[in-house]
Length: 272
Image (tube, rainbow, N blue to C red; front, side, top):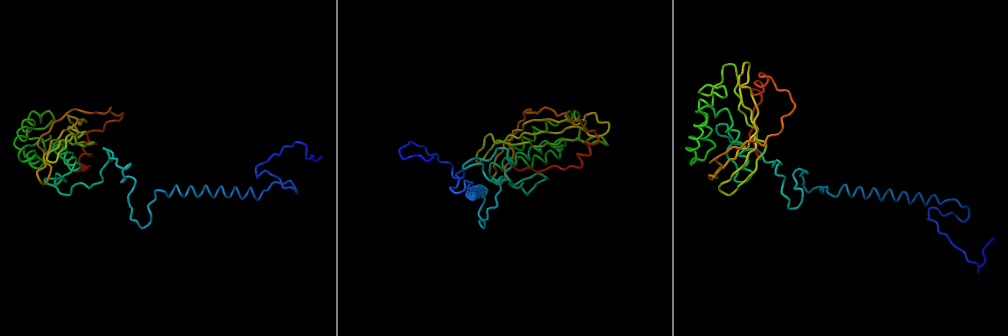
C-alpha cells in the first residue's frame, strides 16, 4: 500500500552497482562491468608509472648500473666495495708500479707491496734486495734492507725447511703466498700515508716427504708510504696477528695437491 504524504517514511539508498531498475528490478550489469574495467586500467597505469620512474630516458646515454651509483645523494661508497678502476698497467721486476696520487692509488700500492713482501723471493738475498729496490723509497731503502737481512737469516730459512740460500729440497715446492683480503687508510696525507692490509698467507713445503706442511696464517700488515712525485713508495712496515676467522670444516689437501695448485695457479696484481 502506498504511503500517504503525511505518513513518515524512510528512504534507503543502495550503492549504484546494487540498485535495481524501476521496470525490471534486475542489476545494472553494464555499469558494474564499466567500473571494473576502469579500476583495472587505473591499476595498470600506476604499475607502469612506478616501473618507469627510475628508467633513464632514451638518447641520454645513461649506461650506469646500480653498482656504479652511490646509494644516495652525498653518500660515500662502501669501504669494502671495489672501486671499478683497473689495476696499474706498468710493472718493475714483476711488481706493479706507477700508482695514482690518490687514496685508492695508495691502497692499491699497499696491497701489491704486501704481496711482494710476503713472497718466496724474500727468503733469497738477491731477490729480496730486488723486491726492496722496487717498492721502497730510496731514502728508506738502506734501513729496510738491513732490517730484512737480519730477519731472513739461515736460521729463519731452516725453520721453513729451506737451505741457507733459501732453496727448497729437491722434489719439493716452497710456498709463501699472500692474498690481501682488504685495505684501509689509517693516516692519509698528500705526501705520506699509512695503510692497513688485512692478509691471509700460505707458508710451508709442498711435496712428498715434506716435514713443514703448508699452513695458513692471518695477519694485518701496516704499510707506511711516501709520495715520491711519481709513485707511492714504502718507508716502513709493521705486522700484527689476525683478525683470523674460525677454521672451516674442510678436509686438508694432500701435499701433492698443494704443490700442483701453487704451480698451476698464478698470482694477481691488486687494485682498490
